[in-house]
Length: 248
Image 1: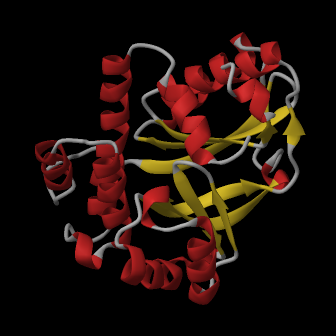
Image 2: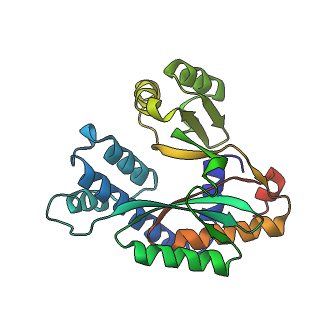
């Protein structure tokens, strides 16, 4: 599967757009609230909050929604204690999955996800069961309009980054996790704020998905996982050819 943006575009074509947008806003708001709780409510001095706000703006989340989510993270405003949890497993076709969630109740989240894995032909594994197929990376994303692929690659190398995957819509930038802050600062000086900036997982070993039916089952499986309110992100090591992606 070539890049985050292509996967995102496929998912956006599925289902009712209004319902999907509400779900996306809810997840973005939770991340903003948690970021504000864990640090200062000022994005200038709280990198995680700043990244969460950038992600919300990239999805055209209304300013009022963003401000409410920040306020909710202030002391005494929200009694829920969210924690970051990670689940691992296999989708149909033996594709590896990492599911990142923000939850205030693990005893709700884990059974819900386990039920999805079971009903959709997947297998939920123990911690570490698929993580070895991925590496931890710093990840930034810019729209393709900010620079050519060559200019972005040159800037990333100068900034201390490691790789860029460019397509018609985005530049996906990868770096070492410890270098994320410095790479971000250097790229911001040239191109402005990224639309995405976070720690992420990048597949080391990919699993081929070579037919349309299997690819559709995988997309439906991931869509079902992302329907869960606690799930923030699903990362897969699927390698889907372009000709199949275009048919989804």
